[in-house]
Length: 160
Image (cartoon, rainbow, N blue to C red; front, side, top):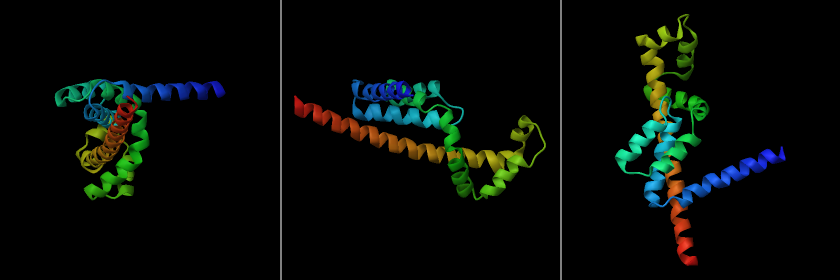
């Protein structure tokens, strides 16, 4: 067990060190990481989308790649309840009703997903919720990394 903790601790230190050793502006590194977190959590998106968007917007692709890899699809399952709750509130649907719509059909998964009723009452609120939750998490990560990099660069200049 102790070896596993040491392994995780070393990997975490290496992961954090990578952000500080990227030779780019703090804005570009933080922006790339925020985009990576956004597309890492959002269902169905991933590395290729992150690379495309960071390239188009001019952010750092390395930080975006690291962030999208760190927040892979497993984090989507952790965010799902809050995304469903927020999406149901924004779209005016009841959270419990939305969940019963998921469980209340005796159709195959494909038939269920492609029905207009399901799309309107479940899929759209979930997507809205995911976009809102992913946006807030990405903004938090952006400011956290941006401020950390600014503080790090100021300390580095003071030492020199």
